Image (tube, rainbow, N blue to C red):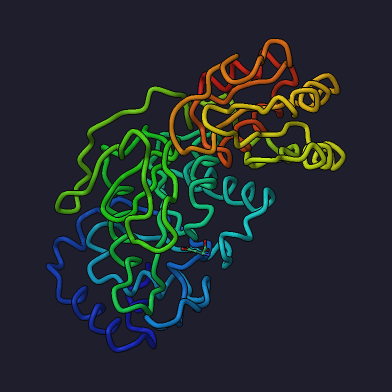
Length: 359
Ligand code: ASP
């Protein structure tokens, strides 16, 4: 990053940050540091406005160079290459944007002059983008996503510390080969497991089996490892994916309507994920609708709305009789992505089921 970057027209606090950096031990700055790409996509981490007494603020405003300048000492951790890939509320992530993000991250990971990638992202769909990168970027280099629950202008914004932590994790050699990671609130989560579980609190992100690790004095400390396939070992490669088939999600609740399923089929869905009750239980009054969909070649994928635990085949519904599938323990938004990716490789129900066990 150009040295004059931190001196350019930033606010008082940020100029303070620039002085802090300028006064650092120059030996540390001139020593080779990991080269980390920061890909900014928007979200609350780039949000402005809002008062404690009012929830209204604008997400996706502050440009990436200002986000970086707002974190004193960040350049001690890594040599940063920042780019603004998009500037959106993460609710506006479409499959096309997801493919765009994955292609860019894969291209950066393929470069010899980049050791890791940090993606700044809105928190609402952060877990989906993280999982998609986890499945489709064929690299062992660290890929770390982060965001913020409070906008940059809030009294105790969590964005600067999250960005610092994400860069620290991406820059550390021990982070390689662990798949895409989500760093929030001092914790390091696997993209396979993490979910946003709260609308407001900075500790909104949680994993059903716990985070993989945490940051201690800006060093990653690992406590768990993944057993499922990802990134370099995944059979999905963003270089070979031009579009995703339509996969819908139907929410489970009392008094469901068959018409919702039929509308998705009509819209061209190749699979429909059921965000099911409990262990994916299907009410008796929907069994014939689901059977009919399966007979038409539209895959029914049972997941759970509970937020944890596997969906068992032939428990709560007769999958063998219907031809339906189960997604193991993936939440419905991630089940949608895994099903869409699996459908780019096979249409066969038992082959799809095998894919779901592997990831
Ligand atoms: N709506 C915002 C987004 O996802 C929320 C956030 O970033 O926390 O872009």
